[in-house]
Amino acid sequence: MRTSIFYYTGTGNSLWVARQAAEALGDADVRSMSAWLQARPAIDSTSIGLVFPVYIWGVPAPVMRFVAALPDLRDRYFFAFATNGGQVSNTLVQLQKLMAGRGLRLSAGFDIPMPSNYIPWGGPGPRQVQEQRFQAAQAKIAANAAGLKLRRDTPIEKGPLWQRIVFSAIYKACFGYVPRMDAKFFADEKCTNCGVCAKVCPARNITIESGKPLWHHTCEQCFACLQWCPTEAIQYGKRTVRFERYHHPAVALKDVLKTRP
Ligand SMILES: Cc1cc2nc3c(=O)[nH]c(=O)nc-3n(C[C@H](O)[C@H](O)[C@H](O)COP(=O)(O)O)c2cc1C
Image 1 (cartoon, rainbow, N blue to C red):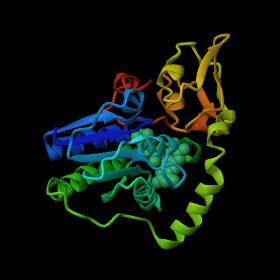
Image 2: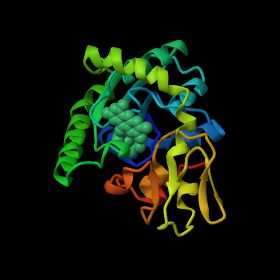
Image 3: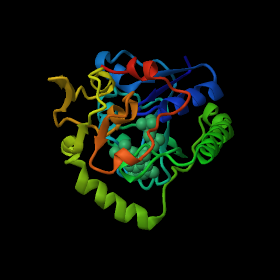
Image 4: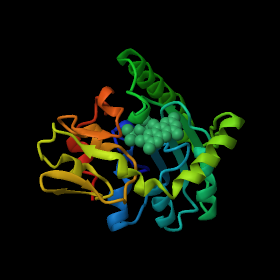
């Protein structure tokens, strides 16, 4: 393959964007970062894409681990798509710096607004607006495919300065607490003990104890457990019971399960 596109996803947006990019580029495969981290096979492709969600206005820890584990690939062309709910902030600049620290060069970084899966702040928004975001994402990927094929340098996209200052400070303050942020998850009376939450957790942070999920404080905050629960039994604090669940409509649970360790 000429291009390998590696993704990390909780609710499918980033997997869908990775698939769209592979289709637009041609001669490309789509691979899970978690699966690669398990076996760390050689990467032969000349171009490498990274697709992942923005978490708390920055790069999620599993993506940092992926970048840290990459071998010496300084002769390759790297690009990235950061999917987000509308505030990419400094995420792609942060990724560029992380990669530079490993001697790798991020040549292009794109902000891809998608429906938000951050349910503590509400649902994903009206279907029509979701559809508009999918179409805009597709159009942006298609518009940039030629440049990516030619391995062109494109400015790394970022949010307004005030966001980058304020939100990067919040990211830094919160980052260390993410694994323990699962303290607010619980399963309500709708739980059927099906075990989907444990299976879909990329961090293997959930076990089923006495018929209910138990979170073990190695959470990545991807919200896959809550969003993929077939009975909507998983809640995060008191508010989420009121909000619509979300996963990308073209991504199935089995697609995400395949990527889990
Ligand atoms: C813990 C968490 C934090 C998030 N923080 C942000 C954020 O800072 N800015 C933003 O625009 N979207 C944020 N989001 C929304 C996701 O980035 C967005 O929905 C993304 O496309 C989800 O990708 P996935 O479906 O591949 O997991 C956050 C989501 C989660 C779960």
